[in-house]
Length: 272
Image 1 (cartoon, helix red, strand yellow):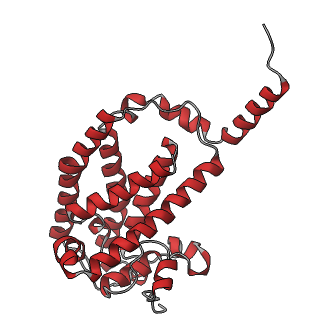
Image 2 (cartoon, rainbow, N blue to C red):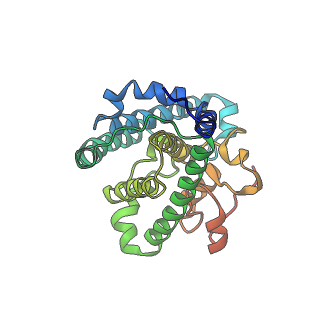
């Protein structure tokens, strides 16, 4: 039996060292292929992740009137969603995922079943693709958002639904029209396809994207909120998006601030 030459060994060692941080995670996921490769998985994952991220904020909204420390962190402390608003938002999210998202997922799964690769992505590749996906989504949503606010017919027909709950709260994140849900989902799918992202990268990106969206609508500005962790005001976060729900013609980008700066639509929050 011939032994591998030194270049092959060096390549294998380089590959394993670049991937060893994520490979155990990916191997563990691959042992659950019956779930992760099921057409049910994307919908189960999306709903479970979204509701799990929303629930802590629902609890905070219930406690806020009785806890002064929470009221100090709430951007609009005198507002609170009613039980009817919470149930209406949750009901619409579940309905749209079961009636719209699941059939589309089923068609995609039937047309292009793919076996997951055995190797995990290298950590720098995963992080780079996640950041690029966020930047692409931010640019696409900014353009979509400006268009749907500047064209009255588009606003009335499609985007007005999302602004019915003001001030915003976590479970109102996905209270959107069918067209808006389809548009944002399309951006997600196209971006990971264009970048040829690894399935693990796609999972990380979708998880992060759901969290950032929920945080943007939560109405709470904590010392550890994402916009406080990113330097130089590059990330607007919850204070940026909460102002959009109060002043419709400003702060169109969902996450970062560079597009609003360039287009003159940035409205900084007042000091609290």
